[in-house]
Amino acid sequence: MVYFPFDQFVITPEAQAVLQDAAQYATGNHATKEVVVGHTDTSGSVAYNLRLSERRAKATADGLAALGVPASSMDVSWTGKADLAVATPDGVKEPLNRRATIGVKF
Image (tube, rainbow, N blue to C red):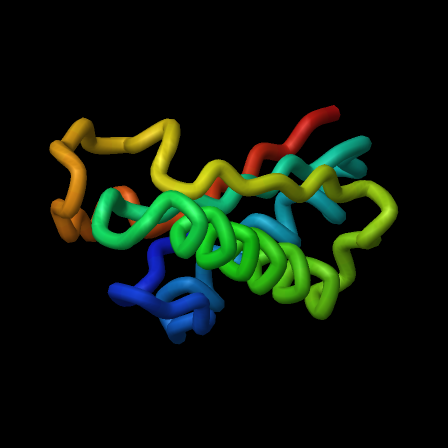
């Protein structure tokens, strides 16, 4: 799980450590597919959050690729403010919802 600051899609030092662990796990164990999904909290419009979750997913995938995970093995998608980790009403700034998930399949 990669977490992002509010309204951003930058890879923080903490997120970089998660990416390094995920890349090492995937490449070291010969994964067949990595599934990356970007998410946002409920603050902001549907359209804005869909674009922000796309940027988060792509930043995460780019980070994995830079660490040796083949881009061709990644399935990258985004959900905007749907599929929340923590259910909140619309307009709530919930840090646990501002994330990208990384799934590794063998």
